[in-house]
Length: 376
Image (cartoon, rainbow, N blue to C red; front, top):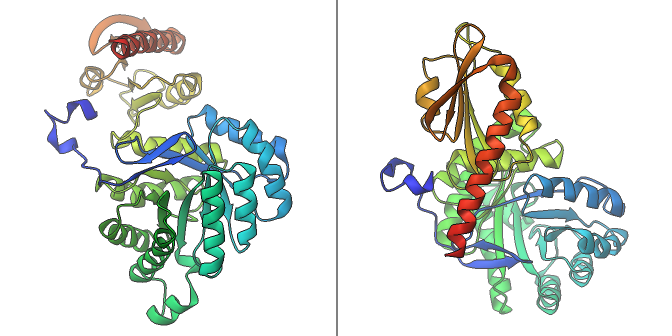
């Protein structure tokens, strides 16, 4: 989509200009792609289970994974987890600042500290020293549910102003200690509160922003809530890395995160399926077909588009805009489109296997083209 901004300016998103930091080998902020994060929900001390979950998330494209380190056994296990992880690991720290120091020593790429419960400035300074000594970045994680008492006393309740003040207070501590490799979040479960806090924060700092609606809910409700909250902010150009918080498998968080970015043309990975909801005009079972194709095409990482439309009302028009398309017709067959052009008829009972073959072939063409351009 981004390549069409010059002729379709209504698709243009002007990203907020932020500093760039590194989380391990992954750049965050600046002109780097918006990264997708998730968090493991295994017992961190179970190295095998935690690494398996990280690898499953990596398979669907996660860039960074956060791991909770609530006790010493977790930070001990973290050393081995970091060694086996295919992506950078962020250590999630609450209450015990010593866990942050241990996590830095264990090889964490980033330390997530919550200003509301990490302790006083002296403890934060010790965490900063550990981060400097071991090449870690830091995420300041402000949360509406755990704001500092003096801010709640001042503002009476969690509000955007309190969240922004909390974040700026801790930015000042980091900067006063000559530490600048940090990003910041100001999450809330209330979409309005989170959006207002992020908008205000974006105006007063150039730090990379970690976007999220915390404790968003289950797979369906949490997806919708996250899409509304984060989609609104991303559309406004705010956000350098995102985490969708769902009461679900972390793999689902990654998938939803990518779908949010794909819908805004901000990040592309794998096959973007454009399909109709189906109706009495459909020439084949659209819903079943799309469900099957989503599973059969999970292995494709090349960004590309596929239209699966049940009839000729919108099918041909959608197919003109996609890499591969299939439009339902009559008498048990439909039309295949390749690179936006009508190609050949196909019987419905051969459709799924044939479309998978065409998508794989198109992916190979696109990959070869990208490789050739990179070599020039």
